[in-house]
Length: 604
Image (tube, rainbow, N blue to C red; front, side):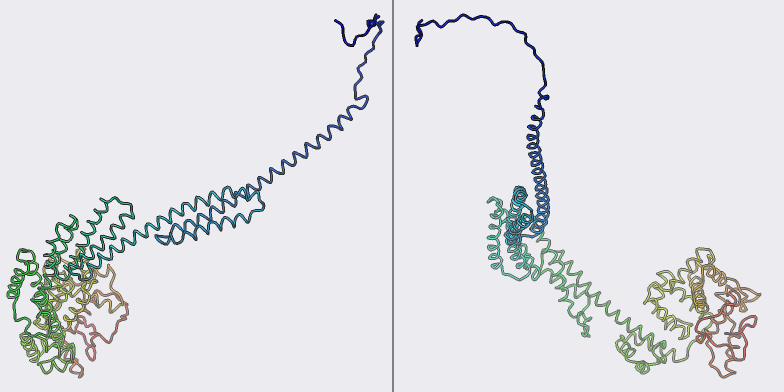
């Protein structure tokens, strides 16, 4: 095919193959010509670029870790401080929470900004913002719920307070029935408001209204019952169907107690009003029978269908009568007690008549004037008998004295019997011994336990078998032994400054029951030491010794007791002891020496 441009001469030429030649190939490395040096130089620049990039990346990572740590620490501290503030806010109650909420939110915001401002760079701040804003948001949200709950609680409490105020007013302040109904309507308004605020359904609100109305009626009836129990009882009947079952039972019980106790006591006081006037000399003219009859009439008028009220009223009348009589007996007893003491010489010389009694001071005079006439006549006879001459203490009198002294620390029954004694009437005792027993009565009344030491020692020696059964089982012998034991225990304490120990107690008890020669008996018969008499001739001999020297003569009782004390000390007392008691209280020995003891010991 012709080509363009067209050439008119042929273009083909003959080609001759090239003559063969020998090629020599030799592998020579580029390093021989310095190529490795150039490559190394080229790689060095690349390495410098890579190292710089790595160092930068490491520096950035370290800074990010530092920022994150700083942000996390700040967030943790912020969380702790926010927690404390939230706890303080949560501790508030009711309206105080709602009022404090704005300041609470502001405090949280201020805290976050304060911690944010302490961070070193913006990157740490951005990290801190992501976590702290979340923490603050949750805390504020929780606080809002707490504040709302406080607001609801405050509102609910305000309604409850109004309701309670109305109820308490009805029970504490007298109100008419119209007042009660008006207050009840006011209370119903607050109950409905409270129910709606609580989100209660209408049926629930109606039920609450009924319960509070019932409680309002109860409070009103209580107030009426406190003033007029029987009026409250009548009013209760008109409201019985408007009360809950629990309130109905509660107010019935309350009114019943008022009518059966308060009203009964009030009516009893009206019937016994003369007994309440101590200055009324005629207050006992009406007897208990007449008063009880009046009480039955009152009960029939006030509560004709309530036999229990009649019984309560009768009981209250009787108790009032008995109480008044007991007070009269107590007053008479106190006056009689003072008169007895006066007759026994407690306030001065022993009186022999009314005139002497008036000289003993205002206390004795007042007691004598207030004593009933029959008691005055009795004690006039006692004074007259003492005016005729005092009783000498005989052996039988000493036994009687020891017996009563033993009763004073005996069993409760024996002690009561002793306390009921009129010591002025005990036969065979001189006035001084009657007064001594009277003083023991006073001591027991001040300390009802009596002489506890004697009682304990008596119990121990009896339990140990040191006192024979015939003495323990015989009341008079037992009391006489107890009286002698007490005398020796007290004498021991006087002599040595303390009571004897257990071993000495047993020795004293054994010595008191030790048989002694009794000169008053024939054929050398014996008597236990605690019952041993002193012959009258020995008593007279001691007295003569005093008379011969012109000294006061000791009483028979003093001589007898000193004789027994010395006899006991001489035979059983510890030797070498020095008395430490007030020696001036002991009876003086006979003038010029001499003794009433069998072996010639001195009379101390």
